[in-house]
Amino acid sequence: MKTPTDSLHRFLFEHLPIRGEIVRLDSVWQSVIERHDYPPVLKKLMGELCAAAVLLAATLKLQGSMVLQIHGKGAVKLLVVECTGDLELRATAKWEGDLAQGKLQELVGDGRFVITLDPKDGSQAYQGIVALEGDSIAEILENYMTRSEQLETRLWLASDDKQAAGVLLQKLPEKGEVLDEDAWDRATQLADTIKAEELLTLPAEEILHRLYHEEDIRLFEAQAIVFRCACSRNNVARMLQMLGREEVEAILDEQTQIEVHCEFCNQRYVFDRVDADAALSETVPLPANQTLH
Image (cartoon, rainbow, N blue to C red):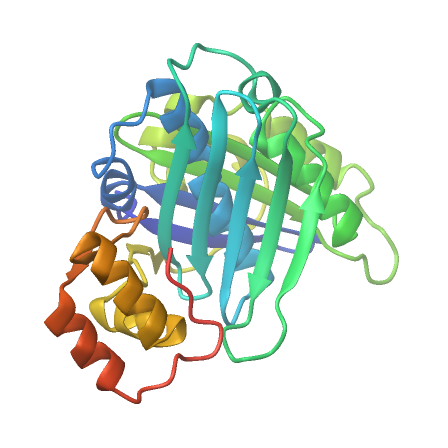
């Protein structure tokens, strides 16, 4: 059976306190990288971060969105992935110079990993700063989940120019008497045998069969993932309202037009004096927590 492209599969180990997810990004991943000329090493990191964002967003059952950000002072300056609870994804990155192959910490330098959970309903967002402990995005996020969520979590991530993919395993709180003390170690050790090529090419059913054909696994129906950017011309108009007429007119006196570029989807919005005046005449308020990147 062929795995649907751009999909997330949840699965459970029957009678064991372990759950998991498998993600596969195809056209969504292409929508991320086709808008910018990212270096190969940066594409690999972005693909892994995109797969991880979907896996974690699905695990946390978000009502709003989750934003994963890596801020660095090395060659890689910024990696940002946003995934909503409905599995709508967008991502962007900033870098300097030619990026050579290297470990994550070497590329980022003195950096930090920020995770933001934004409910998008006007209530306060949660933000956590994660130490860059580990040589990969998977290791860093595993440390975060263990410390902040108190849930043992393992991630296996892969990406290339065509796909990004990943597997997540999570150990659930045990209820009653533990009948299989080796279950978690066995599950993670078997997952350690998965190869990047298998993650990127095999259907979810075949991955689970190869890894856990001796286990009783329940696989749920796939959930679709889409690329979607939150930017719009209306949002830019609302941003101009927030700036106020005096500041907007000062910018127009200097530049003759205002141009806003969305770094996620590469869309450009241009407002001349007539457009800006029309926007400033509107009275539509900016929605709660609505931002433009």
